[in-house]
Amino acid sequence: MFVDRAEAGRQLASRLEHLRGQSLVVVGLPRGGVPVAAEVARALDAPLDVIVVRKLGVPFQPELGMGAIGEDGVRIVNDEVVRMAVVSSREVAAVEARERAELERRASRYRGDRSRVALEGCIAVVVDDGIATGSTARAACQVARAQGAARVVLAVPVAPTGWEARIGPDADEFVCVDTPDPFFAIGQFYADFTQVSDDEVVRCLDRAAEEQRRERGRQVHAGSEADDPPLRDEEVTVQAGGVSLGGHLTVPEVPLGVVVFAHGSGSSRHSPRNRHVAGVLQDAHLATLLFDLLSTDEELDRSNVFDIELLARRLVDVSRWTREQPELAGLPVGYFGASTGAGAALWAAAEPGSGVAAVVSRGGRPDLAWPRLPSVEAPTLLIVGGRDDVVLDLNRGAAARMRCPNDVVVVPGATHLFEEPGTLQIAAEAARDWFLSHFALLTQAERSR
Figure (spheres, one colour):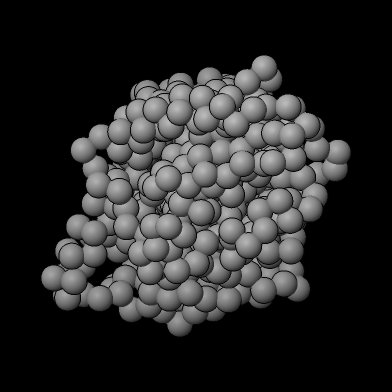
């Protein structure tokens, strides 16, 4: 169902959009829940922290949970398991003492010098990579309550049917991507369920804290820079293919062109990576439209994510809507596609009379538009991470098949999602330069007619 925890987090974040803009804190359960929570926090522009809990395993069968403990002295014991396993109170106490020491060690290791993010009066979004027995999730929810959370939302990518009953009143809201049946173990629903290390947990928390600092800095800077406000910077609704799609349109003063974004699977118009790229383009006086290729209901069917023809038709419809906006009339239109979205962008660009001035693919899957590649006329830039070997080969093959002006830019040290420091900025600047140069060439050609 999920490639890895990061992809699961992005899918889960799309189910939590109704919380955007509210006072919330995302808290992950170490270790496996933290990479999932990091994606949720990033998508919702929320701070990230951990709630450390420890399962109390039956002494002679540790993988069988007989309860859990959490920070602030939270303790849950499943009396039925204790009774069936014939575990004495002394044995329970011994397990609890051992796990309490480990809990305190991990809490100190994860937070380091950072203070705990205050939950008082906030919505606490408690995130794990899945629910099995539910004891650790219950403990985490109780910790959030003890720390003053006004509301507790328990959110996971996968859980067994009827999982809400296992948590009971400890959470106010339950959000889950899917509840497959049969359900044997969380790991069966991940292609990559590699154990998460303490170091990875710390990296996730450090990265999230740095992103929050930068966002606060941008907000302060934006508040002090009142010159040249955007002509438009707003959420919009676009009718495409008979459905309503949400989008965000930003039009700077004196726009030189407009770039329409096509995001990849498991992402949305709120993708932090695409928003970062959009910000770089906006600083260069390019208008941007980030929109969701699928409606919320359509996203529930994973086959739609890879229906490139459907996504391309949506992109064509949205492009038509874009050209009808008074502030954008007559401007060159470009496509920026990421992952599967790049396949849709190239498919749409191959449509006769598309009028697309330039295309940029970041970590894209141009192979999904393989039969249409020779028909693409728009100059195309393919940006790929140097450590994304399989996708790099696909993009080089696509470039050889295309007849339009094209180039492949390899960003050293970058993996598929360009998460390594500085790599996304390199990709964004390459995209900016490509659009500006080809938009300018198109404008010059029209003037000479």
